[in-house]
Image 1 (cartoon, rainbow, N blue to C red):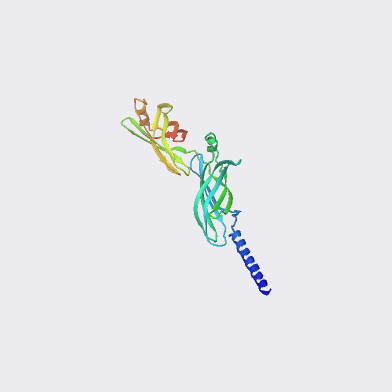
Image 2 (cartoon, rainbow, N blue to C red):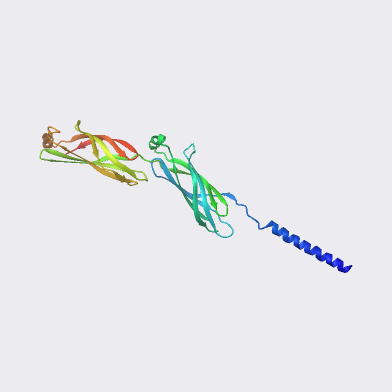
Length: 277
């Protein structure tokens, strides 16, 4: 009777141990669910890249985490532009950024249009900065996501300016040689393609050139100037009485009007002034 009781006791012990093993095996390793958290954008900058587009650069902060370093796998983003928050761009950015356990910064870069061709003229006439919101998520390799949102501004593009900064006038053998030095200013953070200058030239109210053309195709670097020259010669055939002007050494009036031809359009110009021999 005693032996049977012992055997029953051992059977119950083995059965209990087997149940624990089976239940542990069924449960398996604990899987951590990914988390979604809000985070800060440490720095944001907008820079115009054309008359209608801009680029956003942002630094998204990833907070510290217990354990080892992590890896940023991807960022999704959306760019809203203007006071009415028009959605102008969205997408994803592949990442391979290592993030230390103590936290780090994930740099992001994205591009967007800030206007359409129909509204480009309105933008060019408005010197006010263009507002935008850059928002989205940085997703880590472990599935955790950090949502961000930050407002910024981009300087609106500037219409290129032009001026005649110098007129060189010299006389010899009954002729007056003229050189008009034209400067084109690009005040934008992106380069411009200059094609040529169309112009008409009048001296003392008399039209000397109707369909002139000056300059050749060139790139004007960001925040830089381009210079070209308009050359013309006055003589007795095209300007009777030029000899008297030379003798009197009197000032003469000029008018140059036309347009600057760029790859993206044209800019009307009108220059008037005087020159002396």
